[in-house]
Length: 242
Ligand SMILES: Nc1ncnc2c1ncn2[C@@H]1O[C@H](COP(=O)(O)OP(=O)(O)O)[C@@H](O)[C@H]1O
Ligand SMILES: [Mg+2]
Image (tube, rainbow, N blue to C red):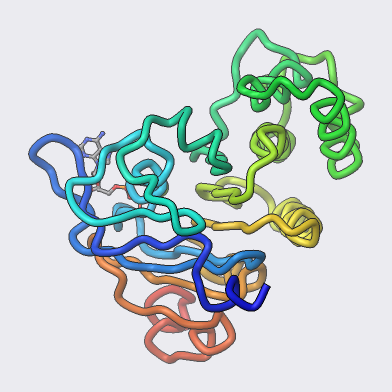
């Protein structure tokens, strides 16, 4: 236990990534400790989604390292990253049209064979978000934005991850719903799950997370506790409209 405090659970170092000729991440280093909620904030186009896509194996790093619990995962295929315990809730939820809420949730568990445990995790998701149980047989894409976000998070949980990464938790959702989702994340985190949140809404992110990394044009420009950064005049002016 004493080791896990000093060794980060997710460690990204000197990471470079991008698309074709377009380099997006230039030199990104950050560390997330086991059991914490951390967040990555930054303006539209800063490279937040590119970072998550590179961690989850959808993009190949051009240079640098991505380590999970000490093991190099940079450059692994998405399935391989998933089985090692990293779940990625994508920007815009990306639920499957024509599939029920239940089937969308179960898709999160498609690499698992532990049937009894899968059923247990499904119950956990339904306890966390009772509305999903009520809507179990409904086409998931016909639900409201907030309900779809719950389903997308639930699908992430169904892989029984060690790290849950959520891209734009609050985008397009009413404040009351965002608050509800934030409470759910704290509850999930209390089960021991490490959470990495990506948000354009800095205020929301800082309320939920303990540690923050600010990304500007593909580089980490500031890092620290949300308590400290939340009081930083530069952050308040640039990202909180104060
Ligand atoms: N598929 C793509 N092909 C080329 N460039 C892309 C692609 N996706 C994103 N980009 C560019 O990468 C940069 C970072 O985008 P992104 O990671 O989505 O930022 P954020 O999530 O912080 O808003 C932007 O300049 C964007 O235009
Ligand atoms: Mg994005």
